[in-house]
Image (tube, rainbow, N blue to C red):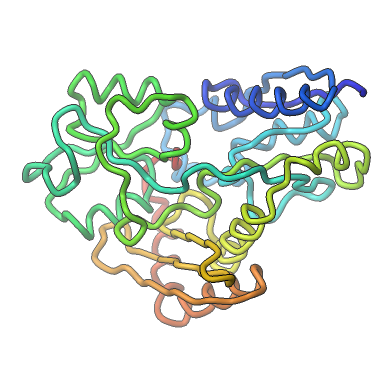
Length: 311
């Protein structure tokens, strides 16, 4: 077997993901190297990324390395990949998905409901902020940046009463000591693609695609294709208050989705079943736009609200 070079961001979680894929490839007889690539999103640490509004801020430099042939594949958190890939690239595999839900972490409280009036909550996405505000409008929301260790350290030091993170990252890193509640999807609809990895290659690289084929999980690809189709229909990126959760139920694909005002004053919900993932995503997106989602999103895009990127 030939040598494969993986491009990855340098965060602890990104490297866990890259090493995980590397070990699976080594198990198939490949020699694998990992190249750490610093992206725009990694460089901007003092500005809220929703305010920057740059699509592909965690993928652009990695795609450049792919295009130049410095790496053969890139391992991304799927929700970091724009719904429309840059020309010349394709998603070769979406491995089995980790838990897609969000998690409530706290040193003192066991659930969102136990938080005291006016408690300080760290959250790095408009999507989470909006749904938290809908449940508990009294809570004080504060931006949360940094890697998983940094965020958990800030929580342990008392900077926040609680923080909200993606379950997948905590489970992959084994950092579950402050996990108190896996938030039900009906209370907090996840981000499109949350918990899934996307393995990107140069378009037309048939040899690498063939090497990666064993990693592709049919259920994960079906569900995330549906969620990303919804996100594309809404014109959204990962800094806007849109949630999407697709899964197979009784042999059919089911999609729950939301569009919300950042302050939680209005949350539009839509749920449908279907058989074609992308068609279902588009249909649910169209329904949300008709019901008022367009006005909500226009307001969000127009204000460039200062909150960081979803973790």
